[in-house]
Amino acid sequence: MDSQNASGDAPAGPLESDFPSPVALVAAHLAVAVAVVHLSMGLFNWFRWANAGFLIPRDLRWPLFVVSGLALFAGLVVAAQGRYRRPLYAGGIALMATYVVGYFGWHMGGHRPQFIVGRGTTHQEPFVSVFVDHLFAGPVEFLAIVAEVALAAVLAYLLVRES
Image 1 (cartoon, rainbow, N blue to C red):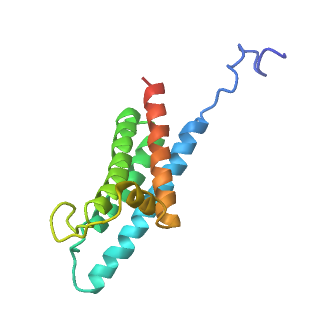
Image 2: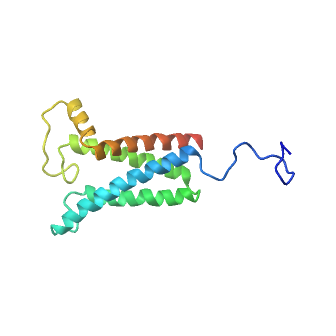
Image 3: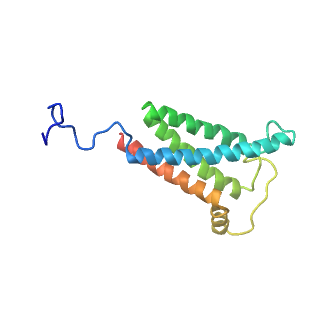
C-alpha cells in the first residue's frame, strides 16, 4: 500500500492539491495589500474633499484610487474562481505599472491636480535626488511602491508560467 492510495487506485502525483500554488498566494496577498492602501487613501482623501463641498474632487487621484482598489478586489474574486487568469495577470501588471509610473510622474511633473494640466510646482533638485526623496517619502509610500513592483513581478511570472 505504500505506492497506492487507500482505495487501491494508482498513486496520485506528488503534492497534488486543489490549493493554490504558493506563488499565487503571494500574488493574492500583495494584491490585497495594494488594494487596501489605494482604497483607504482614496476614500480618506475623497471624503476630505466631500466635507469641503466637492463631490468630485479637484485632485482626481482619489476617485481613481477608489475605483482601482475596487477593481483589484474584483480581480481577486474572479481569479479565485479560476476564470480569465491570463487577462487578469496582464491587467494587474498594467495597473501596477500605472501606479508606479503615475506616482513618480505626478511628483516629477509638478504635483498637478489633473495630472498634466493645472498649476504645478517644479523641483529645483536633480532628478535622482527627487526620485529617492519620493521613494522614501514615508512608510506607506515606500511599502506601496515595493508591493506594486513585487506584485507586477509575480504576475509576470504567473503570466509566463501559464503560457
